[in-house]
Amino acid sequence: MRLSQLLNREVVTESGRTLGHVHDIRGQIVGQRLTVTGLVAGELGLLERYGIGTNGRADPSQPKAHSHEIILWARVVHVGTQIIVRDAEAETSPRGTSVE
Image (cartoon, rainbow, N blue to C red; front, side):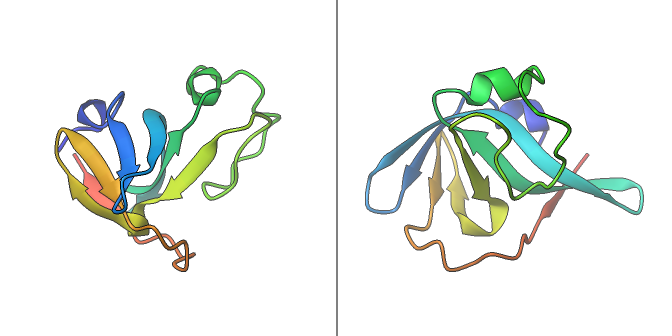
């Protein structure tokens, strides 16, 4: 899967709550591969996509200066026309997936 295929998809929880659309993606380089660690969703996430208001903070699990949600990749249950994530936010350690 390509990163571009995740952008703009709607994110919903297993119980049906809409979390917004994917505006940006968080990741880490592991070896020579990019591992996705989180998705940026929410009303102001689009600003972050363009680097507005990031204040230089680089932690993939933390939101930047705007009010939006970082959804850890470990919560993703299914990627289809929508991205479905677990309701519980119990998982806090990013478990990524490699992207080419």
